[in-house]
Length: 123
Image 1 (cartoon, rainbow, N blue to C red):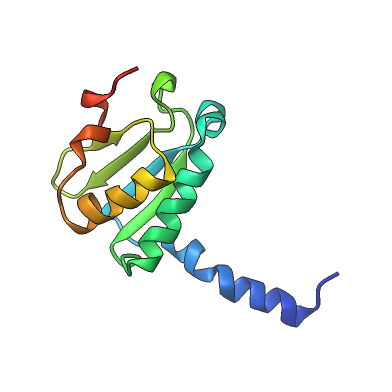
Image 2 (cartoon, rainbow, N blue to C red):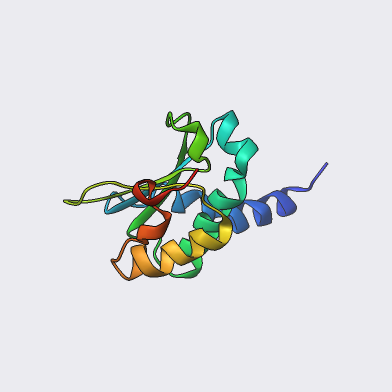
């Protein structure tokens, strides 16, 4: 059993990640985490977004969450990015490396990475 001090240290360490997931509605990153997404590798993608957004100092304007089935299993892992007053962007066949690129180019830079979107996907 952990001591109260150890539990408090764990809570403080994880507080940024918990706050990150509910920070803002300006930009919302939604990772499909149904069984098909998890089997295709969505967990490292979700972790890359959570960590990348936090490291980039974007937690005040970007919320990272997960959802169940998005309905396009053949394209998993799937990530949808919602921005105020903009059309949703759906990224498919994502990896942790692609997630870091999306953070840099799309979330920070404002330019979606077209080659990773559903309209450019090759099965």
